[in-house]
Length: 80
Image (cartoon, rainbow, N blue to C red; front, side, top):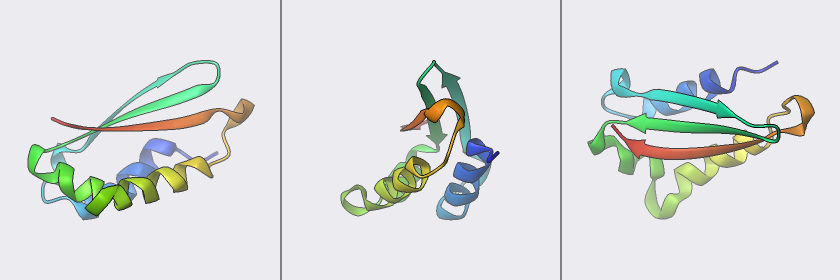
């Protein structure tokens, strides 16, 4: 099974100027895995991208991850 947190870290860390500030908090319910991605304030724009294109690309990749019980993944991007 794919570790969703590692996948997000692998995608996000090369995009930011402060990779040591990247953290992910995960919570789960019966149907949902919620990831709260925290990055340095100056890196939020880099992770979101112009018109949200980078964030949408990351969310598209996460939507195609096959999790047990057909859980969905929600990604929230916040600054530290």
